[in-house]
Image (cartoon, rainbow, N blue to C red; front, side):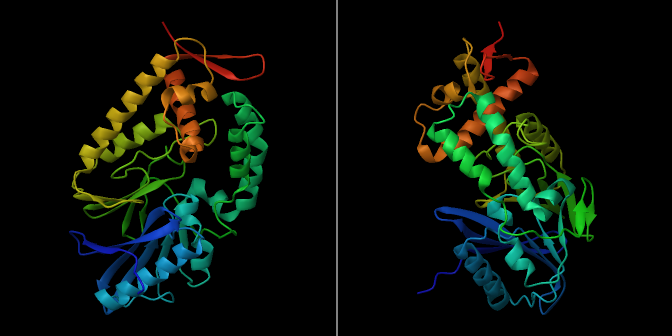
Length: 338
């Protein structure tokens, strides 16, 4: 029996229909894509696809099956030929890897934040830059050059966010009203180029706000607009929105109490920062902080949590809670200020 991907429909106060299709972006890892439709179902006046999942064959298969299910079960007569827009929330492989395959099916123009344009139009150049930078990152974080962590970070630097380049017809800026439908809110932190999208009383919160997890962070020294300082400031911007009834994230289900989720995320980061300060009573590297912060670390989490540890230390350094000095080999040493 064929199992269709999960599909849910939300109707905004203005009558816009927002369909969530959950995809197997990678084995054991799901992501959401959204079909946003206006007008009569039998003859939509506007239809946009927000995020496209990964380039993995299961993800692309789920995307096609989910969109076909929306057509057959909900009567939405959208088509690839008449699709109005392709919209990228942020250039991560689980959200944008499927873009080249989708772009080959439709003439719909692509929109993404202006900072995401180089990653989409020149993925090879971005990958090459990461490969050049990774050795400096290893040195700064105090990661032994022959360790398994170093090997995994080098492999990651060779991975492209999408398999081939795609032109962006509409670079976005904070505050734009795209196609008269999407209010664009630039929310750097998880990715410097990430945007959240408001449609009437509904917020597509991308990976900025998720129902069960805090999004992975890396320090700003690794990427423009990344880091905890930007992430917390972006949470403040989202929290200030009035009239939003539900948030739909890039993973997981809907969030009716999305402000409660923001409060929980702030508290979680305060706990993490307190733990880091307690662990840095003596000068310590990012690499050595990792097992102190996460004593039950699983190998699958290690690289993301290395990034996160670096982001936490960077934030405390910026805020004056940690003093950063340099070891003779170039590794950064962090110590709690007295």
